[in-house]
Length: 171
Image 1 (tube, rainbow, N blue to C red):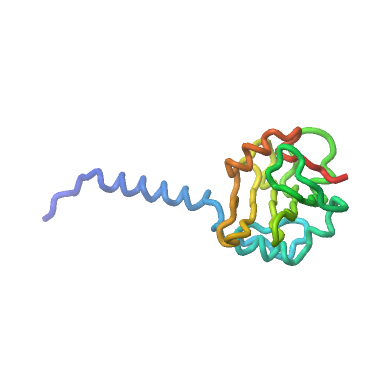
Image 2 (image 1 turned 120 degrees about the horizontal axis):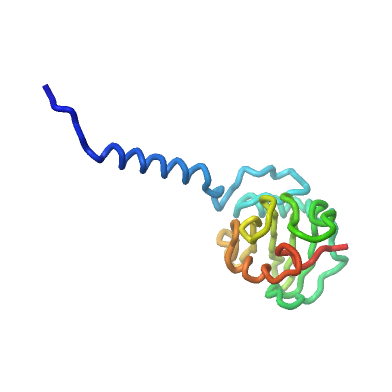
């Protein structure tokens, strides 16, 4: 007859499984695709595959857009651009945080190919980590400059906006 096994392996293994499950449940979507609806005209998809597909459909062009491109406004590093806001961002008058679903697309017109900077409010509340940030890279579309929630470079700059990380609300 075998003696009962007493080991700390079981508790450590169980703790490891719990940690892995907790991480999987809170992980961000893959950097390529997010499972977002690519036909939703008001909400940009996320990810290096889904967002460019959504942008190519041109839904954002029916949003509230600046009439024409202009030189970047300080402190913008984006150069010549035109900004479009969706209805959720444009309609959120007042002060405080924008609602989840607020979004903006910036067409960046420097150089040969058009590139994009996109922000999408993921959850209600304040803080740069409540926003999804994307900026395309003309040299390598599969490796954007930004792609995810709370991207430090985007949050660092947009943290200086007068209201909830948004510099421009198109009238």
